[in-house]
Amino acid sequence: MKKKDTFFVGLMLFSMFFGAGNLIFPPFLGMGAGTSFWPAIIGFIITAVGLPLVVIIATALGKDGVNTLGNRVHPWFGAIFTIVVYLSIGPFFGIPRNANVAFEMGFKPFLGDVSINNSILLLSFTAIFFLLVYLLSLNPSKVVDYMGRWITPILLVSIVVLCVTGLFKLNHPLKAPTETYQSASLLKGFIDGYSTMDALAALAFGIVILTTFKQKGLNDHKQLTVYTVKAGLVAGAALALVYLAIGYLGARMASYGNFDNGTAILSSASTILLGNSGKVLLGMIFTLACFTTCVGLTIACGQFFNTIAPKISYKMFVTLVTLVSFLIANLGLNQIITISVPFLVMAYPLTIVVVALSFFHRYFNGSRKVYTGAMILTGLVSLHDGLKMFGVDWGVVESVMRSLPLTSVDLGWVAPAIIGGGIGLLIHKISGSAITDEGSE
Image (cartoon, rainbow, N blue to C red):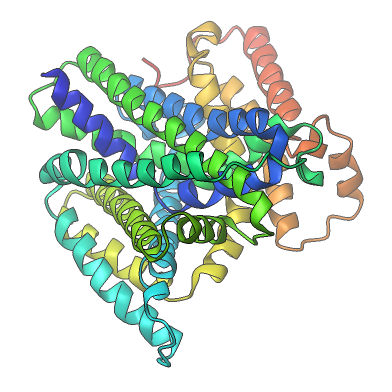
């Protein structure tokens, strides 16, 4: 395996990760954090870069990727958890969200005062967009060449041009942080990193990276793990640098007015810095970023569902994923975000806990009791937090949840996770169990 091949696989992984949320949230964080930018962006990078990288490593260490992690809790949990992850980062939330952002930022701004109904425009755009996604996803072996060698370098150069121009032209001092970032800005950035969905996406992308390396002749599990980690480090370094750049751009833009979201910040910045050319550049950045992520997610979903139902062809699964994504994308961006954010609040803690436990697996003999205890208590808290965002009134339960440590910074699940794992370990020690996880290595 040549070093350049690993490098290009890393760039391909970066392009798969770098989609709508990765562009939208860092500049908005930067604008809100102001003089607290550095602790906030560090917190963001921990969950938006560090956590996905850890997940990639964990899935590479397991012989069956994300299935291995889920099966350590229980085979039923493993099956349901894995399917839910793939559906959420794929056709139900992740792919439609990226397609909508590509429409809003890469196509709609150039229409001017066209009087055509927005729904018809979205339908037309997504029809062409998903046709291209479908065609490229049919040949996953070619994705490294298309995305790693060509599309990703163009994307990175475009971002560098925008951010370097901003570094020299936007010279106003940083403003004081907004109320949200005035205290515990690092933890606030940590929670903001959830919104990229990359930790969940990493569970899916693991199988794509492993398959890519196998197609290049690697079959030894140890070698596959080493090269996957190297590719992950390339992708992680690129992501971190981009987040720092566009986050700082957002911090500088705070002096130019109030903005409702990250897309508004980047749109105004590109126009201020480069005029109409900036609008074109930004449109290209958003379109390429969202397109490559949609291709990566479609391939990941197709390969996963093909492994659990091999009698149905990979092509058929890609067709189904593309069609469902196309239909949901036409619900509109606001509707998709409204549903996806509470779901992420429920899914992320479970993902973090099961991945964290995988690195301590050997120290408690892979006991299923430890996994189960930690996941049950984590699940109860995250379920409460997610449904609360949907407007569910928990009554008396609410006061109990508010009393949990770190609840004020949306990390109320941490203490229950530790307690649940501790109870599971105690039961394991008392019962004198041997390894109970059939999926452990």
